Length: 268
Image (cartoon, rainbow, N blue to C red):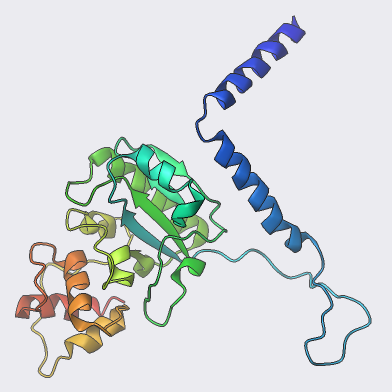
């Protein structure tokens, strides 16, 4: 009887594996992960770095893994979750993310959080220029011209809550792709509910009552204080408004926009 149970369980596992269209790329994932992990299980090699070469290696006892400190939210700009999963499992595309969330709320965890995904590209936030090395990338199945379904946002909020708690990610460090790459990217779109996220502690949102902007207020300096790269001031303004205004995406800051910006710099 026990043999029959084991037989059925094993057959079920084989069936599940055989029906997975990504079993080939999953094998590639495991193989590449093992290759990456191998150097960490050995003592650092003794190399001649210019000083006197030591007689023997010494590995410290005090260390752990580096943790992600930012979450970057994207929309896929594709037409289905399956299309995005395929894109992220083709080596030639050279793009990836840690998580993909489908419209129905299904969450695909595609890469271990401690590994470096290729989602940010050429980007900058404050003084940070290698965003991929310190961030988690979350892709939402959305073509950029449609609202985000409630089920999808619900799953996103649950995931963000887990990530914030597990990695102690600061409230200010939940941002969008357009924020870090304003000259290249428009995601997530103006349909994205940033205020809903801010109300849950994922990013900041301006207060309802905004104070009068002080005389001599420098908008570009304020944008830099938040984190925006203002090398292209028009792109930076548009990215700021895409995140915090959303109803007006013109490349000019109105007095109301400046009031929002003045309010936000006190939070960051």
